[in-house]
Amino acid sequence: MVMSVLSSFMFPPPSSLVVSGLTVISFLILVTSFLSEIRGKHLNYSKFWNANPSAQKQIKLPSKAGMLLLYAPAFLAGLASFWIFPPQSLRSIILQSAVTFHFFKRVFEVLFIHKYSGGMTLESAIPITLSYFLSAATMTYAQHLTNGLPEPPMNLLYPGIVVFVIAIIGNFYHHYLLSNLRGEGEKEYKIPKGGLFGLVICPHYLFEITVFYGIFFISQTLYAFSFAIGTNLYLLGRSYSTRKWYVSKFEDFPKSVKAVIPFVF
View 1 (cartoon, rainbow, N blue to C red):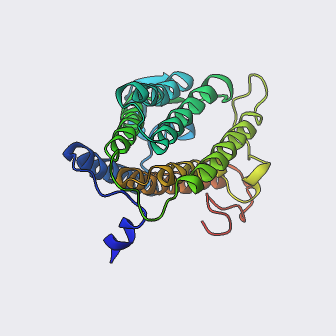
View 2 (view 1 turned 90 degrees about the horizontal axis):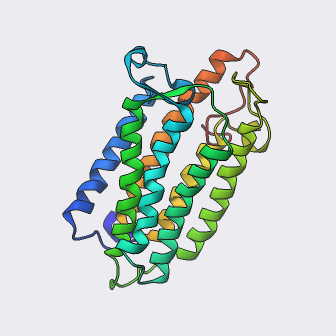
């Protein structure tokens, strides 16, 4: 029953053992990261860069350098995919463009939008970098393997483009609002306001989750589906921890503001 439903809106699983293995491995890593966040064992970046006692003994990177390390390799992988896997269909062109543009946007934000105060440990930066790089590379390769296969009965390409564009704009807008919280030289955290911050403390995570569902709709491959679900879980855990952090730091934090899903969670 489940496989019948999945086959109505996804390409068949790839014959590649590499893609199949990476699909399982990346999903399990993201699920493990979700559970770690819920238990309070955070990846050490942003406001949690020194949350774990062991972080004090690790190699620390400046936030901007660390964030560039996270996103630049994935952007380059997306860019290189046009040469390594020349698009052979409209779906492939749009998928490769969406993956590349998403990580380009993140690099652009690191360089020109975000304002940083903390740091990032190299121990946390390396697995995140590998996760993003492998996701970009595997996403485009999995799409390449669908060339010549019949299209899924339910075509989600065009709804996926709409979802992706809305999510990219929403993610950028809320990152812009966060950057405006701090004046020149300021480093302290404040309660974010504007946009959907009146409903959830992590609307940028909500839109990032939606970005990867948009990419899945465009792709309609098993890898894109599993990565979207895994990213969803991880960012649920991260947003849960972020809300707890704000509640502990600010006595006037609005209790009605949820973590990432308005009115729900």
